[in-house]
Length: 444
Ligand code: GLU
Ligand code: MG
Image 1 (spheres, rainbow, N blue to C red):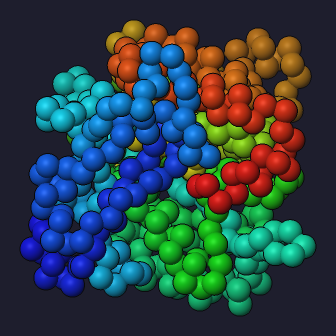
Image 2: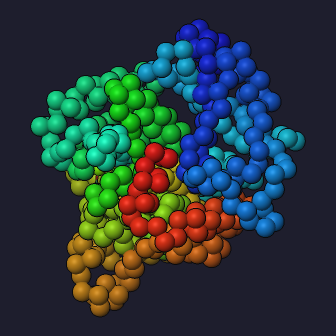
Image 3: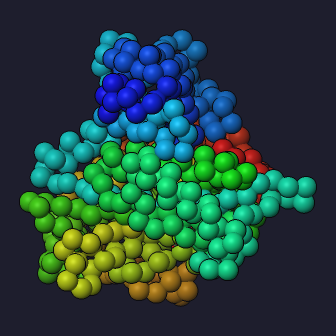
């Protein structure tokens, strides 16, 4: 939207938003009169925020950490939206630029753009859709109090959830978002929203905007929304599943082919690349220590690196391949991702890994239809099904060792993310699940 369109729509202030490497959404706000300047010249931001941890401290990585240095945050007006639930407000994502006007090497949104461009050069296009889970509740005198206490998908929760869902449908619509579905989910207070399919950058922007709207609507109803991967000890966690389809020459490469489960060769190679790099990608999809409380076998969270058609325990779940709409609908859901993840890094990394698989002509192992956790260990090993990292430290080391991600992200962004992961793990080492859950409950 243009500044004039926003002004004509009654906008008086704009929330400019970024997601950092620790997955924290941060904002700076400008009055409408300052928006043109924020879009053209940008506003100041210390480059040290590339090393920010979730508790607002910084990874003091030698050679990277410095209190000196400033980047410019430029509002992307093409992606600006009205904040339907906050009259007078608009929202826009930002890009990081050098003072000289070049995109900053640490900009996560620029990384996604580069990967989209790299794919385009090879005739590949990705379509993406986010499915977000969160928990509505608040801290009470006796611990966490939830908006509803189930049952999962329970119509019995309607008395508690009906008004909130209606407000949410309205607020999402008034913010230009297309909510395909909302429902009360499995855990106490848990809810889920499915967003419409978009091109990658827009899908990620919309997932950030949707979370903003969800948090606002919950606050307006007197509650708080938490996107933390696990909000209550022992509960089913909150995922942020990313669905993607791979297109070439206008055709979905995940259906209509002679490969396994009907994949076309490019779809198989792309998926095989993502599968092969999944342990390293886990540091991006499950970036917080508390992510590993969620990423457990037999919780539909995708704890094993394998793929399967409609298998909800496979990290990569192929779906939508049956019936006449398969050519349009077939997609893969990467289930191991949660909302502590920076969406731009996640989708950029999917593209990088998939394109690597394509370049090397990778092929897939057989699809898995069982819960890998229930297979005898020998059978799992023989099928090459590996458990994804069980701690952030393990994931961080797999990420740091990934030459593929280093090449795609560039050394600076790769180093910053590795430093943030290691520091986040060090800051929480020895904490039990209860302390982790409390530490992160209101950060995401
Ligand atoms: N809550 C589960 C998770 O942690 C996902 C449940 C579902 O498949 O919707 O990802
Ligand atoms: Mg769900």
